[in-house]
Length: 362
Image 1 (tube, rainbow, N blue to C red):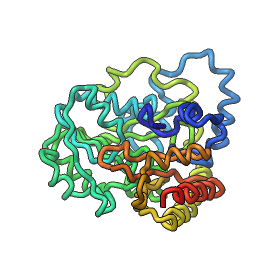
Image 2 (image 1 turned 60 degrees about the vertical axis):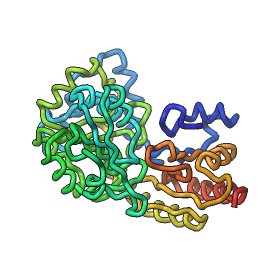
Image 3 (image 1 turned 90 degrees about the horizontal axis):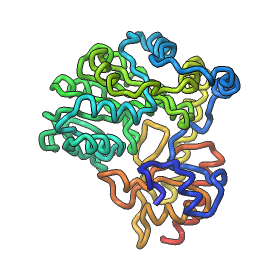
């Protein structure tokens, strides 16, 4: 099992399992931008040698100022963190909800954080027959979901890639309780402004938005994210955050990439070309591919004896191609896989390897 630690992108485990060097794999299990890191990151890495002996700014002021100017919100409405994972954990520990409504399938760290804090999870099932769309019917079917103390919503959701309707989220927030929207992949949406709730979160007492800066800019190793919310609410998280949570290299890289509009435009052009092309190849192989607003695709395997996401993952790994066994997400069975969208030559290698492996079962 490649998802030993609950995530894709674990090249060390893959190398141990399949007897290859880490750099020999093409990794479709992790949803990083294949165009990155942008050149601004490389420049900062060179310059950083002059600053490594100095402590980071504990308040992350320059990065927060740039984000505040970008979105037209107060700097006090922004809390930087050591990746989105830290902010998810801090939110649950700060508000200590007794019950948390979670659409399922969704990112496993929401449930992990809730369980660690002793909270009870109320599943909100997302149905494959409706392409995993989050709607009011899903909440109506979930017992007590509307009265939960906290609600997590991924937009786009992981692993389904579906955006949530902003008007629905605001309606849910008006019922009371804390609503946390994880927008880790929303940078990949060309018309992000239509869907992000950053400005709403900055002025509402119970609405919070989490953003990641590592997926879009392909720098997961530095761990950088931020949360937008009411200053009073963020103070509760800040009181639990360890000092110097965001290191100085992460801060400098975050500041630099925000100015790279050309990289963002190139990323959107790449995804617009390659996502439908990869989806078409997966369909030709007999998979059911669900609509996605993000840089990854959720697919259901054709029925065949012995064919599961786990068995396919093993066969693909032996060929140097890593895919995500999506049955590890609550709410999905053993026939679901998730594929990142990558550069054309890598997508073609994925399709060729998939075709070879599927012939072993079909």
